[in-house]
Length: 179
Image (tube, rainbow, N blue to C red):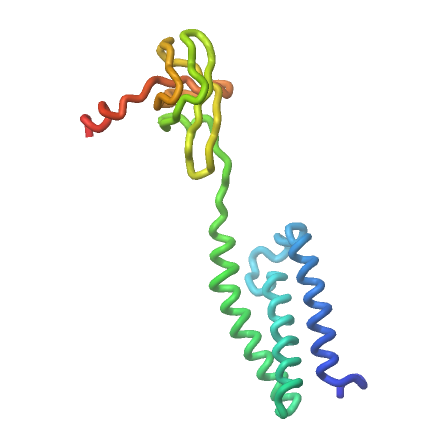
């Protein structure tokens, strides 16, 4: 008994409250994400995980063992420290360092090979697609050399100006011979 309540009730109440706060943190965590940027274990995700695991393991140990309450609390703290450390080092750190940007610039498209999906007339515009790690990018295109380029022709992007790709027909055989 603590504060007139059984310990299982206290552990379960703490687990429910911290679990609710964790759900709110998942939804609105970006607002408080930079609050303690330099101190790793002051991260709200780590603190919430530590308290949740402590409450859950304390509840389970109180409910299903006959150990003393002090020993159960110490065991719950030890289990929580181990699992929170594993969570931090094997999940949170790799996730934070694995930020991937899906942004591309016009300059990054230059030199890539695309395929014509709307034929490019002599003095007009067509459309090409470029397959990249970001997905499939469709761009307006015109011929760099003023020639007609038919549908499904591979093209090399020479330059990109004002959202228009200037392309030239790409001869795969020529690049293989020079390599």
